[in-house]
Every structure is written in structure tokens, then in C-alpha cells.
Length: 596
Image (cartoon, rainbow, N blue to C red):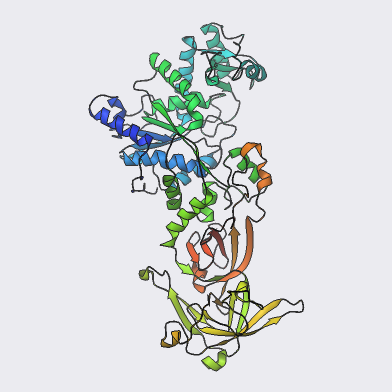
């Protein structure tokens, strides 16, 4: 597992202020000192031994029903980062309470992405990897305790009647006809649910709180429902499963989470979170102090959608290749696109942590990527729209068309310790099609009749003409090598030119499939206001070209990063790039040109 990033998260925010206040109070004996450590009370899966000395505990609790996306990166970095900065432990916990939508595939993918981002769920020699299903036995006992205390009942209304009788923001709810059934009858009915004697949807266990509460979440929320479905971790042990809102607070309490941090959409759920934990503590099932929930504003990134349902639709309808399509905002897709963990963490940390939701333009993420790769991505020349350049006096200058003139350039202009790239010059080269103009526009300094340019790290050449096919298309350009002008030699500055172009020699060029990715959507908020997000799909989000790259890239490792000079930052595709088949994905252009 990769190590946790050592650099503290910059800046201060309200969550840091809360944690620092708590740590100060606890150090003075004014607060719940038991929060400093100890093994969770009812969690038999915890290893025996010395308690983990974590000062605080946070958790990242994804449901394993899909792949993580860029929005999850905020919560991951926040929870793991706070634990790192304040000497605490961060738990990775899978809220696997919905067996019909959850799979081991998603569990493995989530673990892989958290690790890829650079975080670890280990602390002080202990592994903090949990799942809600670890606590199903305790949750069932807690449900029975609530029933016996008259705080929960089995409701046999149809789902439609339950929705209708719940009311809305202007109308109070209506009590269920089953609400006043005795605890003994409710307990018997609940055990029938557990024993598989009723079909899915026949009844649910509900908390008995207040059907007239202005907070709809307190109008007797469901605690358990019947689902005759095999669970990826517990198999067919259970046919009733806890609701997320019931399970989540219990998990926090059993794991002794000190700061339960979640996004703002859970703010209205906090009263039930507190109600449940207080009653379970009063019933003697949970030890105090109890965890507290804090909400922060979620990160929204422009030009993406993060709804799991909509992302799944993109995959199922084949608008993209799959969950790891480099255009997808999933972390697995972004990794394949070439985004680095460092760039994503920098974007998240730079976005701040507030109590309001915020929008971040996609260009900020691209800027973080450029800032990360600029200093470390080796350079290479690539030709993406090839046009043949024929050097008609090559034999005259070099003595033979068989001669290959060795050339070199720094692997990185600011890091000489990375060494030199080596390639050679020959009588036929590939250049970019845009580097020749039969009728040059004003200010054009590349190849046109009579003009001289420098071939980067090579020689100065003078354009003398071009060749067209029967359709009138230019298929080759002819030029003369200007003798004694090779870069790095005394004659290199003898002739002044305004244009420098990149090239790859035809005799050693490596054919490459180059995928030019762009934003998946044209609209900065493709699904806002009830819009059909599919109508905002960008038809230019992918263009595949067959180009040529420097010979050294024939040995490029899959997932290796490069800056193709003039073109941007690229990565060797982690799935399709292999020996004998070069495949590169454009991660980002050199500059932000979106909409310009």
C-alpha cells in the first residue's frame, strides 16, 4: 500500500478549528478523553492488542455500488488529510447495506483508488478497513432493543401508502395504522421478517419519532427492509438489511469516530443521527462519548456529471468505453487519462473547505496537472498530423542518403540529470501538416516557399516547393538543408530564423495511435435545472489520429507521462499501450484553450 502523503494540508478552515478546539479541551481533561483511542466496543473483527493511540478518528464510508468519481476525492483527501495532520486514524469503511447494487468488484476498485490517491487506512500498526456488514449482528440487536423500548414498529403499509402518508414540507404526515401495535407484537413481526416469512416490500421496521415534524427525515424513518438478495460479503445469512441512515451512525459509534465528516446533503439527517445514538446509549448498547456529525460543502466540477445513475447510463448506453474511459470523471478514468494523484490532491486542497457547496472550473484541475507534470514529465517530439518533408540536397550535404546524422536534446530542459534523448536526421522526415502553408497567412513563420526554419535540435532548412496528388492535396514538401547549421555546433547561429518546428525522422519514427481527449460535455453544468445531460455531450470529446513519435518512446512503459513538445501532456495508455503498439492519451494541452 502506498504511503500517506507527508505534506500537511495548507490553509485553515472550520473543521480544523473544531478539531483543534477539541484536542485542546481533551488535553485539559475537559472533554471526552475516551475518544483518544481504544478498540470499538462491539466490533469483534478488531484485532486484540494495544489500543490504537489515534488522537482523532475520521472515516471515508463509500457504498460499494459503483466506481469513485472526482467528487469523492474531496471527501477522501479531507478525511485522510485531517487524520494525518492531527495524529489520527482514518477508517475506510464500506457501507454495504444494499446487496442488490453492491459487488466485490466495486470494493476492490475503491480500495485501489484510495491507495492510488496516496492514502493509507493503517495507523500505529493497525489496519482500519471495515464494512457495515461486520456490524449486522449488532444492528439487529439494536433494532430489537428499540422495538422493546417502544421506539420502533413494523409497518405493513404498501410503499405507495407510506409515501403518501409521509406528507410534504407543507403537510404533516399521517400516523400509520400499525404505529400503536404493542412492542411484543412488533418484535414477533420483526423476527418473522428476519426469518424470511414475508416477501420483499411487505413491511418495514420504522423508528417511532414524530409524523408531524417539520424535518421530514424525522417522520418515522425506515430502519430495516426485506430484501431476499445475496450479499457479496455475508451471502444469504440475512434477508433483512438496515437502511443506510440507521447503519451509518451505529458504525461511527462502534468505530469510535470522533469527527464524522460528510457533505451538506446529510445536514437534515443529523437530527436522526443524534436521536438514534442517544437512544441506543440510553438503552446501554453504546458507550459515551458519542460521535458528532459535521457537514462541509461538496466540490462540484464544471463540465462533468457525478451522479452514479447518470455515469452508469453513459456506460450502459455506450456513450463511453466503460467506467475507465479517459473522458469519465471516475477516478479510474482520470488515472487512465493521465491525471496524477498529486494533481488531484492539489486541486482538492486548493478548493478550500467551507459550509457551502462550491463550483470549480475544470481548467483549475488541468492547471494543477500542468503544474505537477511541467517539472517532471520528460520531453519528446511527436507528429500527430504527418506530412512528409523531403530534403532534396541531403546526399550533397552529408555525402550519402544512407548517412544518418546523430542529434540529441535534453530529456527535460530544467533537469540535466535526466540525460539526453538521442535520435537521428535523415533525408525524409515527418512534420506537422500545419507547419507548411502554400499561401502563408500574415505572421506565419513556418515552412512556405522561400522561407527558412530550424528543425528543432537539427538543421535549418529552406522550403523550395511541394507535391500534390490528383485531388490537389499536398502530400509532400521539398526543402534544402542549409549546411553547417546544426543545433549545438558553431554554425548554428550563422542564419537567423523566426520559426522552429518539431519533426521525426521517417527512418526511425515509431507509429503511434494518439487519442486526443477533450471534455465530455459542452455545457459547464450539463445536468443542472432538469436538463437532459445527454444533449450536452461533446461530439469532439475524442479524436484518434495515427502519428509518429521519437524512437525512444518505443520503450515507453504503460502509464508513463510525457510532454509532447507543442502538443501537451500525454500518457501511455495503461491498458492498450504495449511493445509494438504505441498508444498515447492526451491528458491536457499545454495551455488552457477551452472556449477560446
